[in-house]
Image 1 (spheres, helix red, strand yellow):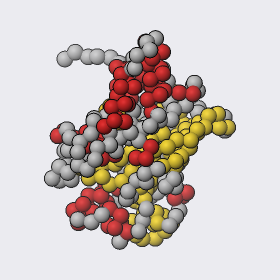
Image 2 (cartoon, helix red, strand yellow):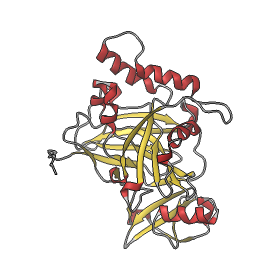
Image 3 (cartoon, rainbow, N blue to C red):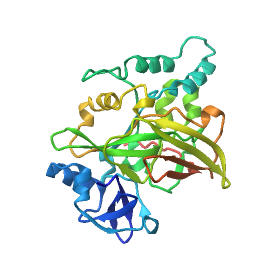
Length: 323
């Protein structure tokens, strides 16, 4: 059975399945969304449906890799996420907010994290405490493998966030259907966030990168990877990171429940990319990124990394017109 999917572009668009390290073109489809819709209509799992349509091998080094999921109408792909979900994820946030307030009392960030530790993994079908939630943008913000991450001219920082994202398709009857997982760089402005935790929303409204692979099946409980920032060809900062439920204060099911409980997020045909959070940031170590840096995030069982350079966007003044 294939382990993952990739979207690519050569003389057109295509989808390939990776089985035992070999990529093979999937016949009859040009996008992951098209493949997922067909599998859903057939009542099949995505892995089984794709496995039955494998064609000739393809050399991934000879094609341009795309995001593992997209939508022909960007407005029908929603990118969102949750924070303070990983064990240790509150330490950096708490420290910077405590410093800003010069107050020994627990910050709201630490209170939110402890709520997750105590009630983020409910037993059985019980509903746990809701996590911090944020909106990042629509499908237009997703950056393909190898493409640059644009730091807005008004931003105070452009920092990486190595994360796992759940990828979902809303079925015709409104049922959120997880089709896989992607490795990603959620990318945020941590200096703005440090100024006031109520600016978290501002710090998140920007690009995000996904690795090439859509991992099928269950997500391993313990994921271990490495986040690296290269500067002038040399690793200027590097640190291991962990993810998966064994390293989280919330279960994935609980994060999914509190996202999809809103009816607006269950619109048939929509695609959702939902980041699950991280506990590892170069910003927490005092590292300051700069244009030209290259972010690389790698973690098994994903065989391909997330790799993107940082660029500074052009200053584009906003002009408000009257009608």
